[in-house]
Image (cartoon, rainbow, N blue to C red; front, side, top):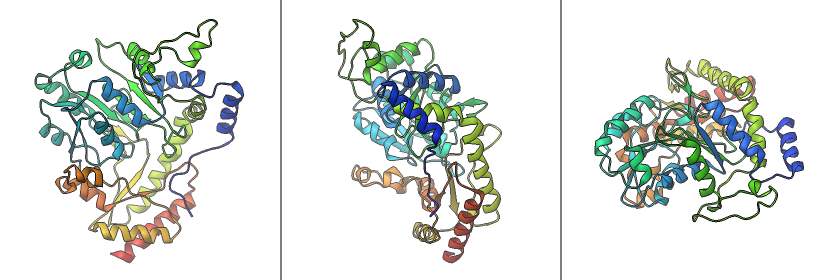
Length: 401
């Protein structure tokens, strides 16, 4: 069976994790702090905080911005449930909007239609690792500054809608020559096991807030907020006589461990020179082979302004129903090839349907979803495997259509 997305665990990673174990630092410590510095240098943002998940990072930033009951957060209907769940956790209202027909990302025109005086945040999602239209989204946030009702210190200081990028898929992607992470106010990455760069579980907040914000001070504040509100972490308390600490807020527990950061440091070291090189090769080989089939929409992954980080390869089958797509998937699995669907739209999930959302209100989202199949992309996928996948896909489509 060709798997869908196994992590790359080799001797280099195992040796670094072993070194972390032997060092005595297995929770947040020197490796986590070094990983944060290296991410900041790589992305070009101002400061970075590593956490145990991207989900935690999104919620932490919503709460930092004061999002609460009565507020609205705009996000695409085509995303994973975590993007919406964190809005619910804060007591606010998710305002779903439709996506583009050509790249799965949030449609800027739809964002503008849904901005109200209650809008506090636009949460864009870089689907499959392909960046959103950030210049246009950032401009929208500025355009509606006069409509923005600021509440609290951080909203007043920013004076407009916060643009919070759910960049869970897009670490290493480019938009107009810049890496994701420095494209808007705040970006949040995921380092989950299936991501291009993994720490097993993990994520990072890439702070890039404009003046007069002090991003370093915000980083230091968030370190406290994400460790029970405690004003010293374990590393700081190891200094001689420095045991005493205080709890200054009712914080959360979502720090990254040094064991996770050990994996991330190796992953980052070889990311551009090795990982992305192979992922790009895989995607290009898929496109060359599958573009021969007129029934397949090939995903967009590179233009003059954007380049994906090649996280997913989401094809769409032309002219199929959702049920036919599901049958194609079943037949592909019968060829010992694992595929997936990204994603069932959030408004189609039971929890959100029970709140009154209806996927029929997002026709492009539903159309993209109903025809989508994600093919395997991972470092050790061989050229022979790629051909096997393509053969299985073509065979299954031919059997159904």
